[in-house]
Structure formats: C-alpha cells, structure tokens
Image (cartoon, rainbow, N blue to C red; front, side, top):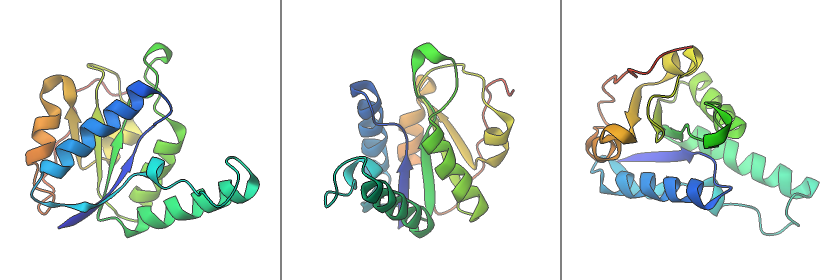
Length: 156
C-alpha cells in the first residue's frame, strides 16, 4: 500500500473542495494506504501562533519531511481560475522536491484544457484531467505499477 503526500492549494472553499474530491478518489483506490494520505492543511503547527517565524519553520519542516516519506506525490494543479494557468507556488515546490528525490508525481487538473508548463509535463508519471473522468481514473490507477499517463494538454 502506497503512502501519498497530497499537494495543492487549500486557501478557498473551492480549493478545499478539490482537495476533498481527490482524497475521496484516493481512498477508493485499492493500491493506496487510505490511512496514510498526508494533507498539509490538516498538519499546520498548532503550538505556535499562525504565520509566526516558529510556525513557518515547523510547517516547512513537517511538510518537507512528509514529502520524503511518501511513496508518491499527488499534486493539484489548479490554483485561481481568474489568473491563467499558473499553479500554486508551494505545490510546485513540493513537486520539485519529489522529482529531485525520485518520488513519482501524479498531477490532477480540474480546469479543462489548460496549458501545462513543460517542466511539469516532463516530470510527471501520470496526469488526470477531472473534466475527462480523471477522478474516476485516479480511483482505479495502479500506484504499484505507476504506468505512465502523459497529458494531452498543450505544453508551454
């Protein structure tokens, strides 16, 4: 069973809903350890005042440690619909860490037809487009085999 680090923005209701939908798909997947899906939003340091230097350091250390403990990083690309196709910078940092550590990266996109940066398209193991039944596919994807599934989106 595979441990997942789920990277993605969680700053708005819509973003948190996307995270919930991906979690639900992952929990349906028989090759995922549903008790070991790490959600950064659920692991914010409570011992320090939010956004204090100590809090920032504690969150950074916990999240980076969990990326390295994961068998796979699943990342949600969509950030803000009204700001083009740029994904969340923290999410992309976590993707970069995973790539550098040779941890497979699975990308999930909710907004159809977005252009994808070539650094992301070349670093992914699999791409799931929610507008094309992607969450259903994610729930059935074999994380033990990690078959390559490239994006059909335009690459920039």
